[in-house]
Length: 282
Length: 267
Image 1 (cartoon, each protein chain N blue to C red):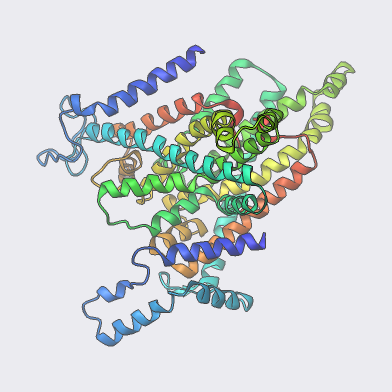
Image 2 (image 1 turned 120 degrees about the vertical axis):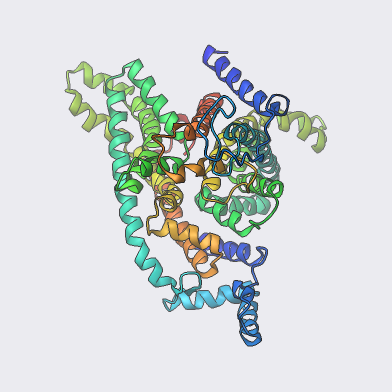
């Protein structure tokens, strides 16, 4: 995992370094800038030409807690991340909570009370929401004047996926022979849900929970950019458009760390149930 | 074929056909400005009104549909070709080659798709001609989307490589080239076809998101994402026709989702 995170940072640095115009500072276009200023700007940019030296320098700083300086924000990267992370974490947490309550709640209802028309309507609604980009849903919520649009949009973007997969997982769990046996013995439906269905579906649902974190991180970028939320997603968008190398490297490594951790947790859950295949659940 | 699939295929054929043949029936160009009527409401002349620059929204929607419906499949084809090449190589060669290709795939998959796309697109030139911007956007979609299908292809090729009929073919003196063309590729094609159909709506949505963030196809060329940026102006309630691209986008992507193989849904 550590190698993957370092590689992603290095790949990001290479991408920005070899981007057209990467070694030219916008300040050079300022007609008032004197020769000395332009020479200083060029020298500063020339220092960024050597990727490996720069990346090694960055890693050395990282060990000492120095994440570099963001030129586009005129602020240390560590301060920027500390400032923006709480907003994103709060939004991700509330968005995921809402998505799980909605998605899993509907999935349990559909699996518990199989009604063809209701199932088709919910699956169609989920399919429709999955066919709209998160950015468009964010626009629509903003236009509707929703105050906490970003959290709502996150919930609405993720809930259909959670509903689709957990519905399939729960339908499969409800179809198991031990559930039929429990029903035949007169066990109440709530006992069946809590003692038979959910425990047997727990590894797959756990894997889905971990995967939903990764989905939420991806969705947060356009949502924060559109809703103008001062979080990490908007910072990533600004860093990308400004080609702010130190900020991009840190954000890339941070996102890689979060995603790979989520996926590793997902795989741990799945390994507890070797016969489970996420594709077959779908 | 179920009737719903027939309907979906018919709808997509009509939309694609209308978009591709628009030069024959749509007389207004997407960049023609009617300066005497900017921000005009829908009328017989302009079915979806005009934008702030006086351009016919309907003509722009038709042309934007052409851009998305032609280029998303092209990008999907590109990523499938890359996936076939790299996934096939990993599955056949094994050893270090396989490990390297899988590490590369892991690197691509460790970042959320949109984050990766955003960084890569932002690093490409933005002040280029519209045609070049289309090329850049969709080439990036195609090239960055190889990792997930490559893993599927590699798994399929590995399974085939160890299968009995391939062993018999080898024992019968089949050359590696013939083995590849006559046995492996035909058997991997269904997997690639499924990945192709999965990728098209994903790429359409990705292009739309990039367009809405201002990193997609450059003006004056229209695309669905670019057209949807008009929503930024607000006041949709009195101008519901601005949502036409959103309805068309939803209808096309839902149709494409319905066409794709159900067992290939993956997180």
